[in-house]
Length: 137
Length: 273
Image (cartoon, rainbow over all chains, first blue to last red; front, top):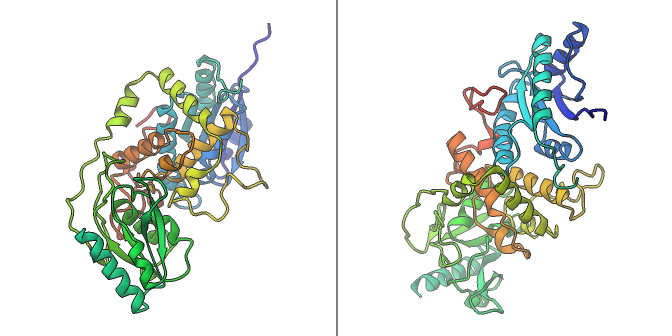
């Protein structure tokens, strides 16, 4: 039977991580096809609701923005950082695996890091038990 | 009943001198041991006030719905909600006259940390100070295996009938348009399926994270007995540990998620730090 690739929704900020993904593509770095990229204006735009909802139809979520200090909007990712720390704790608290939802900072110059991160997240999600999509599957 | 006399005396004075148009307090409910919120608008209505076991609703919830100048009889939790509402520009400090006391109804909340009002224009009683929260319930839950935690949470979420009583009772949930009722776009599914329920409960916990003062209004309002305080108290604990912030204690500090520090924890990142 053909192995079905798992789906990972990636929320990438327009100014750094999305450009980093673009650079990875232009540089022809290879990475697994799991990612479904959604471009957001800033990592601060990533409402926890987006993450929870994405898990209804995907097996994992990756959220990435500019490195702290490099935010196009000065402090968007710094405010988001507090929120993400709480989201991560909340998901862990209700028994969701650590690798299911991941966060990182990737700059526009880090095409290589983007490909590596995508590969790492993809392999971790692949190795997790089958995701129940919030009990609906 | 000296405290109750003080309340009535002050309420009468405020209404008689037209300093406020309405006084918010409690009167006896239809069930024994239960009290119901009461709005006194005339001097003789003040006699209906009570201050006893069963006065446990969070009255701050009504302030955002009132446009007149109001006096409010508060215990610890209401006063902390008022502080947050002022900080979030939902009410002004001038708009509300605070009659502060110590909670008369500790029977239902044995682990309450702040029984005494933290802000008041007029004090009706002097209580003991705050007690440190040990978060014993959260720590106990964290000791369980991930599978057991997931199973428990799924079971709790599946009880929910999505009546939104928890949101209506919560003084921190004052949005005129709540994400649960929006249709364009439909942010969250409207069914009582387990998935939609989980997304609703997680998002609700995030919306009140750093603002919830653990008054327990949501838990008391819930007709299905969902353990709503578990997620709230987990957020409370994380905010306290990670950001050294307890909301609703002072008008001078910023709410945890409204500010940031350069050296905030980055343990949640890939690889951690």
